[in-house]
Length: 225
Image (tube, rainbow, N blue to C red; front, side, top):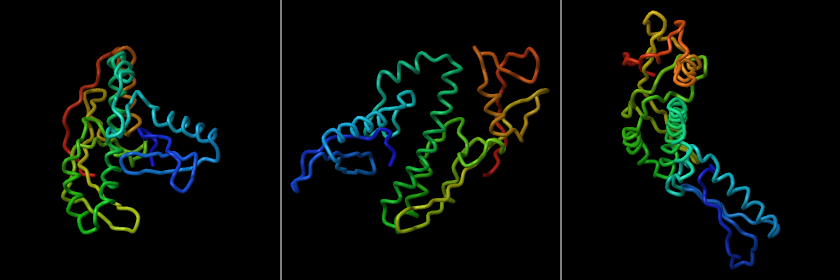
C-alpha cells in the first residue's frame, strides 16, 4: 500500500478493550494497527504522517484524499522555464505509471466476468501526456514516446489475488533532429533525455558548436510497441 497521500489517524479504544489503535487508509485500502504503548503509537503516527505528506513538489497522487496545496504551487511557480519542463516531464511520467497500476487495481475489485469488458474502456479513456514512455524499457533501449493506446487489444487474466493486465501502446521515435537535420530513430532513452533536458539558462547543448537553440521536434511515423 502506498503511503503517499494516505490518511493517518488515531482510533478510539475498541469495544474489546484494545488501546493505542490507529489506522492508515487510502482510496483502496485501510489498515488498522495497535501499538504497544501510547508513546510508541505517537511515534508511528508522526513517522507515517511525515511520509504521507512528503513529496509536496509533485503533489499527492491520490486526489480523493489530498489536494495540491499552496506550497506546491509556490515551488512550481518559482521554477525557470527549463526547470518547469523537467518537472512536468517527470510528473507526467509518474502519473502515467500510477495510472497503469490503478487500472489493474480497479479491475481487481470487479467480478472476474466483468473485468474483460471493463478493461478496454478504462484504457480507452486513459490520458496520454505529450512526452511519456514505457517504464519497462532500460536507459540504453531505443526511445519510444507513447503516442496512443491500442485499447481493443487489452488482455486481462484472472487470479485469486491479483488482476494481471497486458496493455498495448502505439509508440513514436526519431523525433529529435541531430547534426545535419537528420532525425535519429535509434536514439536511446538516456541520450534522448540528455539532449532534451540538459539545458542551462535556456542554452541547449547540441552537436553543433555554438548552436544554442532547442532541437526541433517533428511528428514521426508511429512504431507499434
